[in-house]
Length: 149
Image (cartoon, rainbow, N blue to C red):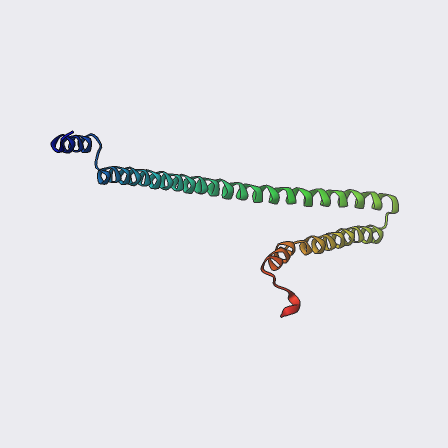
């Protein structure tokens, strides 16, 4: 093989395969295109999440308003039921005893018993409000002790 044949084979071999710099440029362009597409996809996903959160917030506030309205109506119904029950008991006591003082005393006692029961339950339930276990867990996580302060 002569020197000129060897040189022409190298030249033809170089033209058959693209230049390494050209390959890198193609790869970098593909990576850039993929990055743009990925950014676009994440941006549209974030926009969709924002729209879903806004819709859920709207529905939640509407449901909360309706729940409050229904609770007020329910409480009104309970008050009327209790008043009707007291009136019925009062009429029954007065019919048997014909004593206005005994009737009034009995109804006041029933009302005070009901209020005492409600007050005790409010105290018990309000004592459950809070994040004691969450705060304890957070203190353990951060290794914070009350004794250290």
